Image (tube, rainbow, N blue to C red):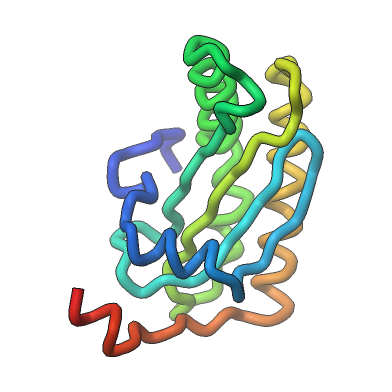
Length: 142
C-alpha cells in the first residue's frame, strides 16, 4: 500500500462534520491527540481525516501548521493499521484528530500516540462494526 494522503482522504463535508460533532460519534483521548470517528456513507475514500489544532492553544499560525503537518504525517505512515482491518461492507469512516496539548511535541511522540489511537479504533471496528446513519430529510434538503 502506498504511503499517500490524497485529496479524497481529507474530510471537508460540512454535513459529516456537523453530524460528527453533534453527538453520537465515538471518541478516545491519547494525549496529545483526541480521536473522534463516525461512519458516513457520503465519503469517497474508506477513511477520511480531519486534523484540528485550536487557535486558543497556539496563537501563531506557524506553530498550528507545524502540528498539523506532524499529525498528518503520523497518520500517513500508519493508516495501514486501520485500513487493513476494515471489515468488508463497512461504511466509510470520518475521523477527526484534535490536538490537545498546549506545547509542541516531537514527532516521535505523536507517531506513537497515533499508532495507539488507530489500533484502538481498529479493535473497536473489528469487535462491533458500525452502521452508517442515513441522512435525514433535513440533511437532503440542504
